Length: 84
Image (cartoon, rainbow, N blue to C red; front, side):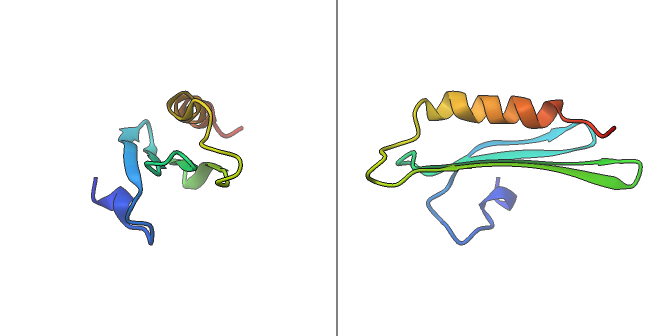
């Protein structure tokens, strides 16, 4: 998990860090649920595919609604992507 924590924000919580077919998936969020990000990087025949989903809210907007479910949805979308 240390690799996913290489960031300027030490408060990030690593929700997912796993190897997927031909790549790697990482999801992080802040404990206050005002920020989440999911990133998938995969390689196919020498080409790279990157999926990045970022969701950030302000204090006025409140926390991300259903942050865990939103993270799961972002991961599902990213893992389903494939090159043409």
